[in-house]
Length: 140
Image (tube, rainbow, N blue to C red; front, side, top):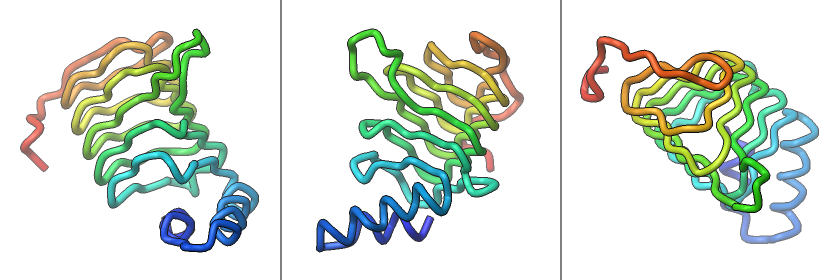
């Protein structure tokens, strides 16, 4: 997303803060500059209502739909999720705690992920349960 790149590259702290505020107001997205985000992040439908923890790590070519939360569990630890390359996260999903979502994994809409999701798996439900797809991580 262009505004995220501008905020991260801005050498003037005040300008970076202004871009961050604009991102929240215009797009309704909370993506802190400290979050590690790989190239090719796609916020489908503008990512409206998406909240990403400052310590979250997001791989390359990840698709995140609107209303997604990547955050902590609120249990006193400050562990944030790690999202693998090529993952897909459906609308309204919550990925909480220090979990890892594998490469090319799929998280269904409104799923609540509290445990690690392996590569190429599909997780659905509350709490999320895993079903495996017929894909290998090396396929496109």
